[in-house]
Length: 110
Image (tube, rainbow, N blue to C red; front, top):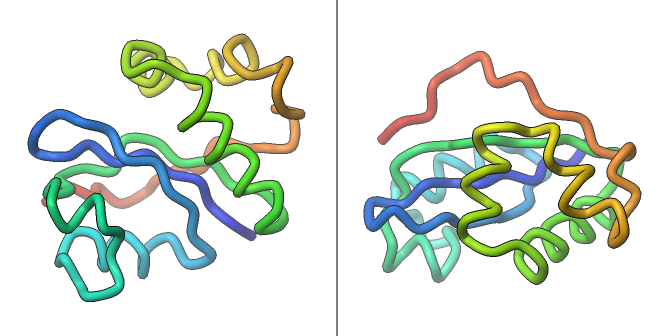
């Protein structure tokens, strides 16, 4: 499985990324580990907002790219509030049925 996730940063920006091991990757972002993203080095990650899972890296990369390339900040905020908007926003770009909302059992706030 691969995960596509959206993080809220302290400046209220939203970072979108992919990971094979979501918990490990989030830890890298939140602790500003040397392997965290360049973006989260300068924009402190504070909360995991939403995550989806899919079967492989190629599909994960497609969703990450579609979110980054096609959605405005306002649309990303709406998507965080209502995950069902994924289909409405991106159905003409990717096969949205290939992504499942990840149930997040642990709070990731830092």
